Amino acid sequence: MRHARLAAALLACAACALARADTLTVFAAASLKEALDAAVKPFEKRGHRVVVAYAGSNVLARQIESGAPAAVFISADAAWVDELEKGGFVHPGTRRNLLANDLVLVAPAGSKVQLRLAPGVDVAKALGEGRLAIANPQAVPAGKYGKAALASLGAWNAVKDRMAPVENVRVALALVARGEAPLGIVYRTDAIAEPAVRIVDTFPAGSHPAIVYPMVLIKGAHPGAGELAAYLASPAAGATWERFGFRRVP
Image 1 (cartoon, one colour):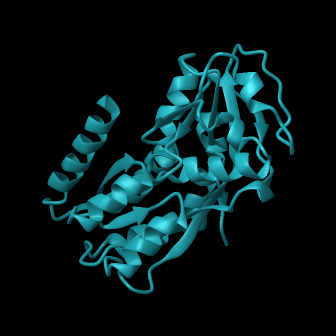
Image 2 (tube, rainbow, N blue to C red):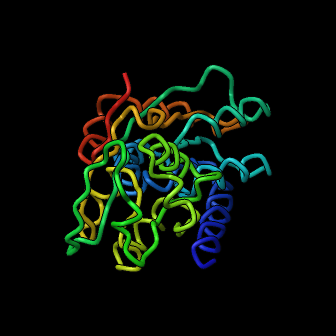
């Protein structure tokens, strides 16, 4: 609940910031936090102020549908952008796949758990008496990818009642980092950003849909939004994305 209130506060702050003519508001998937914060700093030297609201892609998409004044939306999966396009919220012709990521199983840094993520893997046994930290698999991209991967490996039925589902991937990461969950499913970039966890293994690429981050401009966006989107997709920003573990999509 505390995290949900924080996300709502960030979205409200972003909406207030947009009242400034020189401010660009970006709604971005929680997993982009450190990388996007770093990527926008050089752009701001061009004269625009950039405010970023981070949350689960599902939460952000619903806010846009409710009229939140975002200029740019970067989702952690295609489905939420598809929905916004169908609803007429996206500026036509602005969609592009910006980044790619990997899905990993993490444990607290001091954990001795060893697992190979292959068909037949026994994730339930590795959990012991604990629960699996995962973003809500019914709505949040990281959770949906996680459910697909576990199902593909034959592990879903054994763990589906042993979940600790949360509102976004960063909350799942935090549960593992604090030792409140023995295992969690997050993106590789999340694991890189948190020294209190370690990667147990990477889910095979074929076990889940490709993890791609589409970026779009929202109808009625600030005139500088196109310039920002072009910069985030440029080679200049590419080095920053790669430094934080993301892969650029040509």
